[in-house]
Length: 138
Image 1: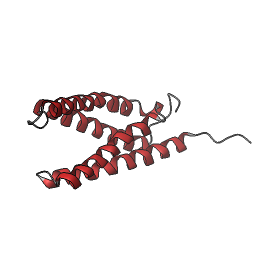
Image 2: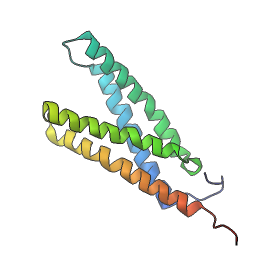
Image 3: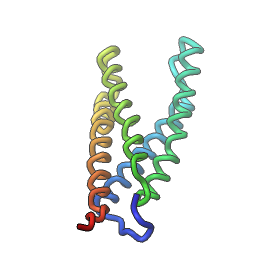
Image 4: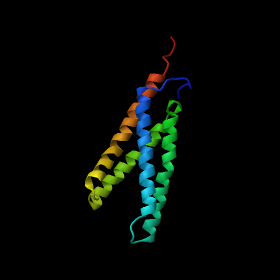
């Protein structure tokens, strides 16, 4: 964690932008999925789909709050990168099992983003934390 008066570095800004992007994706996609629902063939699938969409919407404020308070954040940032990465893995499993949804480019770009964002978040946050450490006195 950093002191309250510590400046926001370029690395902080990168993490902030990535987290705000994740918040926007979670909110937009989650609201769409809440409204659209799951497969029409079973009530179980629709129920689970809408529940998980609500969880997705619920993460958006957390991502936004962490982005807003990035100078004071530590390990929580790493924990937020994990579900983004797992979402990418979920897409790859879906692609392998059921093929590419349409439009394929949108879903491929989403999967790529879900693998790039966590890596950038971890790298930039680690950089920010390293730059904020005060060297030990001899």
